Image (cartoon, rainbow, N blue to C red; front, side, top):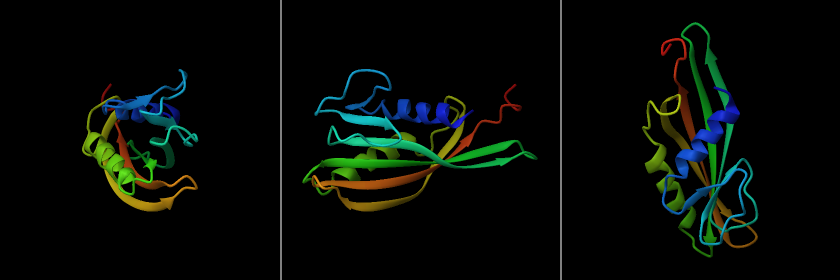
Length: 139
């Protein structure tokens, strides 16, 4: 699976969370939604998540591939805990997920709180390891 496909799958999985929307080619997001972006987060709406693959490990001997993915989360303006709340929802959706859409397993590796942006919206990053299904074993 290539990184673009994996990123889109994770964005789609996150869109299963009530109120979270993934519109890769659709209309802009409403202020009441949590927007899911491939990569960088747009300026609006306030609540947003950006997903991006940033590292890969491929073991040709064992035919095992993994990817590291970072989620950047941004909460509502002047809500100090909102990015943490978004991260918790993402964790509940992704942690331990297995045998879905070519993904063998997902686990959170680390997190890092950040400061507020210039608009008073707290940010946080989450780093996940995703083990991809062995395509040869499933053939």
